[in-house]
Image (cartoon, rainbow over all chains, first blue to last red; front, top):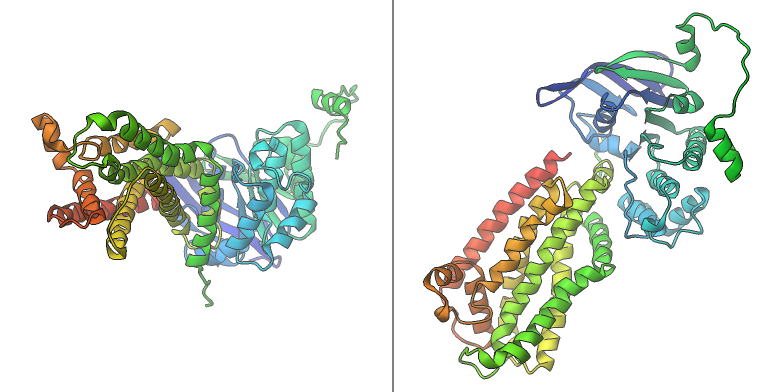
Length: 254
Length: 255
């Protein structure tokens, strides 16, 4: 074991659905307090890893330690120390934003659920919309509520499974800012994404999942060092359509 | 090693509060489980009742037990639907990744079904009273009626939970609603079974709704209760247990 405290360490994880092998021996570690991005194409098994680490699914073999607890042997302890934000914003659309927050605070058996709800709603810019039903929220707002619900309580580790899939550029930036804030407050963030720029923007370390294995892992600088040194070329930078969209609609970048 | 405390009852209370909000905020649910049965009761008593001969003066007295069972049957489809939405939206995944009693989420739905049915049945009985329904029965008989209705609700709720948890599409989730709707119609809920053709009559007399209707009717009017009720109750309990085990298995497999 290294000196640095690990929030997650996974060894030899395998999982098959019926005859179809999805994970064929996954190893990686996540440093406590860092943002870790798991990259992979659709169907690579990113969600399967998230489900195993969040105790929703049992692996066929291998060990996974989350916040010092063995996922297979101490699932209740793992659940107390993590939060999961699944691939689809799991908010109750019939309840208001505030009711959603209070429900989670009650289920985590916390004192003063109303105060906790108001505080987080304000932090996530949902104060105005707090008493509207979640079904009236935009995609970005729904995702923010979803993540806010994950932060109720004292989770040291937050799983975000493709948090920006299906969001418009503005919503994506909103969520990125939220993730940065999380990391600044010392929470470990485990992020899966299929967008390379998202990992590049946010992650302290990156792992690439391909054909059931982690084929490479490291910091962005380390991954870049795997390739021959970049050649310096001067090119005229055209604004991307995203830059244009954000400039016209007046959203601040970063 | 310290253990993690579980809070089954408080957790279930939160779940109950949540899905009761779903019921009370869904006009569609309220119409189907309360207004529709009342409309049917009005229709049968004031439009068709004159032509139906049941051997009683007050057709509403004859009809009420069947209407109560129809209201419960109508609510079963919504149980499937609410469970299906929770599975699809990832709400159950969220709950199951939290330190809460695992079955609390499912029991919350079942309890909601019991509580919301109790409320709609009270409203229906109040309307029946306005329409001239009178029962000489005492508290004990009414407690027995409440118990039978609760068991019937539990049975249909657990049956409805199975497609709700396992369906791939919302249509699939609702598939159980139709046969359940039909059960009270092909029974002695509206008319005595004597006039039905032999095959229909055989079905009507051997499905659980008929003896349940007959028993509730007997209890409401201080009549002797027949033996067939014990057979019907035994069936209800057996089906409830079977559906409970099956639904729990599907629920746990979902992870």
